[in-house]
Length: 104
Image (cartoon, helix red, strand yellow):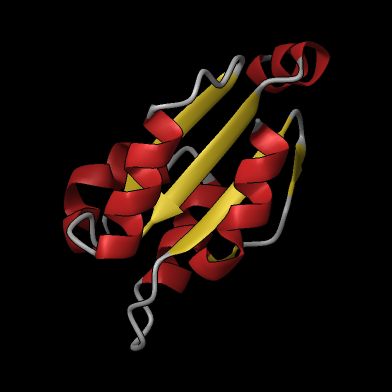
């Protein structure tokens, strides 16, 4: 039911996955929080705190996969943007600038 409502309302989610102390994550979280993003949920997932995220990860396969990507050996943070029932593939934080432009 929530996905039906979200798809009809144009709800968006922006999920950043990576170490919250990573300068890239800090910079983009600050920038996203400073914007008025209507109908948008901003989520930050820390791979090091996976145990505390079990409840969410058991209910959301997209977040689970995104966290796996962020937990790879290179440790680079990643971002995923979804709107309604459609999601962009997880991509490198270097591409977030174009996403931020689209979000307003």
